[in-house]
Length: 105
Image (tube, rainbow, N blue to C red):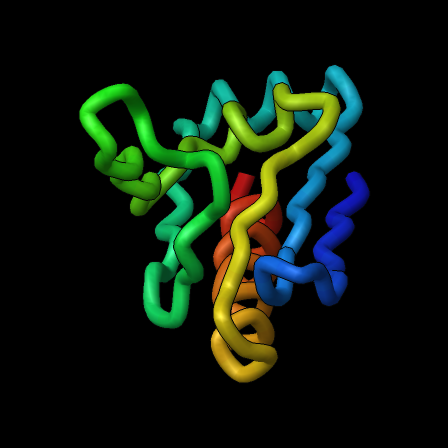
């Protein structure tokens, strides 16, 4: 199991990257014990450039993802925040939830 949560400063704000790598055995245990929904805090989220659709409105950011969905994505996922405080809070909350869920499985 590898949990990689890092951040970087960009022109749009602080981007937090979340990547989870599980072995096939760990992934099987996760499914057998019941997949966990990871809450993704939205406080301090920045508007992402180019995120608007044809109607001119931006897509609604996801508030949660299943752990298996995060682990199944080779690139993981990223979320952009307006400031470091909110980015760090997001990273801490997500890491804690993922660690707890993986310890329980």
